[in-house]
Length: 130
Image (tube, rainbow, N blue to C red; front, side, top):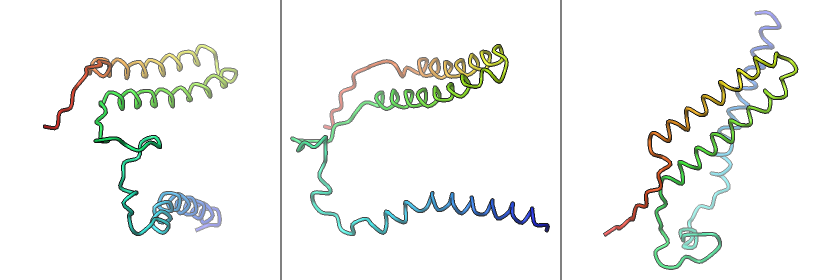
């Protein structure tokens, strides 16, 4: 094995161990620093700094979470448009516009899929545990 191959393997091993440390490290640190006993106040419901009144467990509709996920997906995907916009001077304008249209078209397919599945319908469902 020559010197370059050995140094390449050391780089890969170092990055692998660094990634593993970043992935497992927070779990180990939280286990070491977490309190060992749970106090009664720890198990109490906490809502916006206010003391809960009555039965504090309220079920939220899944629609709120679906909207949040769709927003998050589009918010992160729009960030990918900025590097493309800054790279327009390095590639032809037609190629860049075609790439943007394809990218936004794929995002639009996600919205159409969610629409067809009925995600955007606000049907009020009443939860009655009895």
